Length: 157
Image 1 (cartoon, rainbow, N blue to C red):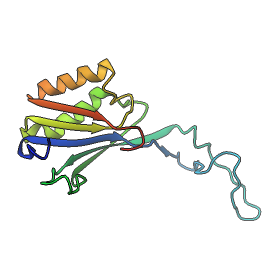
Image 2 (cartoon, one colour):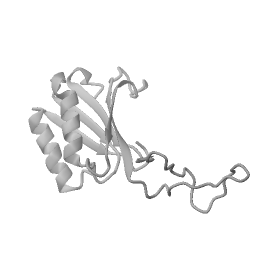
Image 3 (tube, rainbow, N blue to C red):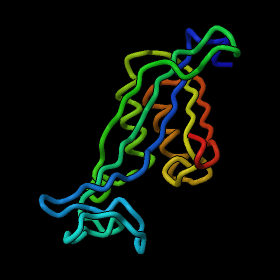
Image 4 (cartoon, rainbow, N blue to C red):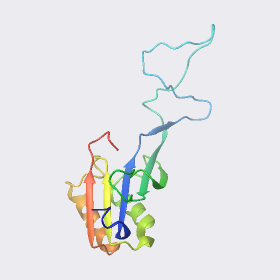
């Protein structure tokens, strides 16, 4: 449907990626699992922080506004990519945060149809009432005529 009405449509892929651990100055973080062997120089001590317990981290949040192709046989993976970095403690991932970011990206397009593809995470899951209310708010704020929100299986984003 997005191909048929491409001049009226926004096709968006949205996902938060894996939490990146950030080390503290002079206190490196291990990039290996616990109880695994590592090679170090003779007489050196391998002293690093546990990668599961870092004080700081970043979560890349990715939004791709796709260029809708002319045919189903062409690639949908072209377009504008927007990446935001979030602090996992102070900037929690939520449906409302994603809707706000998405609104700021597509408000200027003035297209009445929005096709939204997300992963199956709890902040995108359309079966949750908080996500449904957020999508309704986005529908009204953008003055849309048609909104399709699809969750792909986790791990396929």
